[in-house]
Length: 243
Image (cartoon, rainbow, N blue to C red; front, side):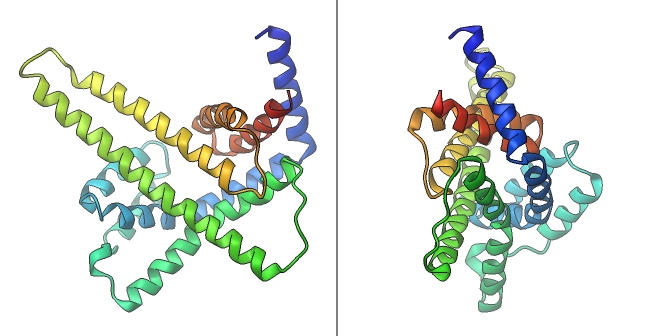
C-alpha cells in the first residue's frame, strides 16, 4: 500500500464528507445521542440483568462515564439506574415503559440510517411508507438489542479476565494489568463487530465484507476520538469500497 494510495483515500473521504454536509448530520447525531444515551444505557442494563447482576453492569457503566461525560449527566444516569426494574420483575406497565425505552434508544440509529443513505448514494424506495417505517423500526430495535448484548458480553469478559488474573497470580506472575490490556482488546473487537453489524444491517444496501471490516475499524478509531467522526468513518467505508 503506497503513500499515494493512502493520500488519495484520505483526500477523497474528506471531499465526500464535506460534499454530503456531514457536519450537519454529525450535529444531529450528537443531539440524538444525548437524547438516546439514558434510554440506551437503561435498556442495556435491563438486557444485561438476564445474564449478570445489574449492580455490576451499572457500576461498570458509571465508572466508564466518569471523566468522559459531564458530572450532571453521570448523576442523571445514576438516578435513572436507581429506578430501573429488572427483566424478571416486569409488570404490564413496566413492559410498556420498556418498549418505550427501546423506541427512545433507537432514535440515534434511525438518524444514522438517514446519513448512510445519503453518504452511500442509496436511493430510497417510494413504495409503502408503513412497510418501510416498520422495517426501519425493527432494524433499529435489533441494533439496540444487539448493543445491549454486546455491552453485557464486554463487561462479562473484562470481569472474567480480571478475576482469572487474580487467581493465576498465586501460581504465576500474571499481572492484572495484562488482564486490563486483554479486556481492552476484547472491547475493541466487540465494538468493531458492532459497527460491522450496523453497516451490514442498517442501510438498504451494503458493501463487500472486506470494505465493511476495514471501514468498521477506521470508524471505531474515529469514534474513540469523537462521536461526530462516525460520519467520517462511514464516508471512508464507501470510498475504500470504490478504491
